Amino acid sequence: MGEKVKNTDQAERILNAAFKCISTKGYANVSSRDIANEAGVALSQLNYYYKNKEGLFKKVVEMLSKKYFNEIEDNLKKGTTGSESSVYLIKYFKEMLINKPELFKILFDLASMALWSESLKKLLKELFDGLTKLIEKYIVNNSTDHEKLKTYSSLSSSRLILGTLLGTSIQVMLTDEKEDCLNALSTLKLILD
Image (cartoon, rainbow, N blue to C red; front, side, top):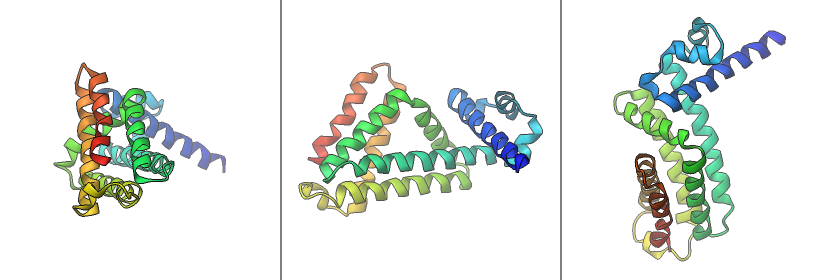
């Protein structure tokens, strides 16, 4: 039993170290040795638990996808109408951009890598499809006052909302005028009201 706990702790330390290193320096700028040093383990342990750096990155992405998918759903559930849910979603994105920008750094790093890697493309597609379905369920289909959205398929409207959130988020990450870009997220309400 003790050995299993030790192995789990070590695997988790490696995962957390990988997240920290990648979110700080970017995937391309982090070596497996950097991650092993951050985790305080031998380099061979990365290969033992995750096979290679890409395997470890996939696990980091899976962990983050699950965590943030659940957080987004919890925020959407706070609203009783589509309009209220959209307010909570926008607020969540703003808070994450201010308090945990490393999530977006990894997400956008993944997006660029997914263009060249089928396995990463699959992970990102699953995340975007899942988030689109949440937006469709809690905002678009839970809306009596979003007639503009109902002109198009609920899936298309949901993709537009997610695309707007992500597109504005990358602008926030790249600008020196963060406050103005953060306020741009709030203007999404113009579309949704």
